[in-house]
Image (tube, one colour):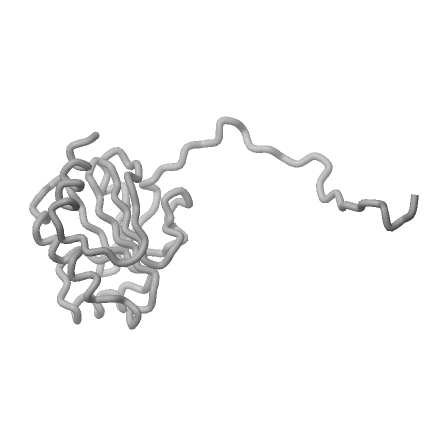
Length: 165
C-alpha cells in the first residue's frame, strides 16, 4: 500500500462525555431586559401574556423609524388589552435607546437587551425579527425584516394568541 492511499485522522478524545438524556428543557422566560431607566425586568414578568416582540440589532442610525410606525399604530390599537404585551428590544445600551425612542416619539415599550442573554432556542438569528409568543411561552411564529403590522389580520392573530393558553 502506497502512503498516499492511507487516510489519517486525529483522535482528539477517545471517550467523549455525553449529556444526560433527556436534555433539560429550556425556560423561554429565563432572561431579562432593561427599561429606559436601566431597571432590570425579568422576562418571566410577561408569563401568561401573548407577546409581540420586535428585536432590533442594529445601530440607531440604521433603524427604520418609518418601519416602526406600524408597530406604534398596532400598539395604539391594542395597548389596553391586559393579555397582550408589546416589547421592542434593542441590542444597545439603554441610554442610547432612551434618547432614540424619545426623539422618535414612540410610546410603545422599548427595552435594552443583551442579545446573548436570550435563550438560544428563541434568540433571533438576524438583525430585525418580530416574534409572536403564545401565553404558555411557546413561540407561535416569527418574521424577518420590516412588515406593516397595522392591520386587522395581525390584531386578530394577537387576540387569538391571548385567548390560547
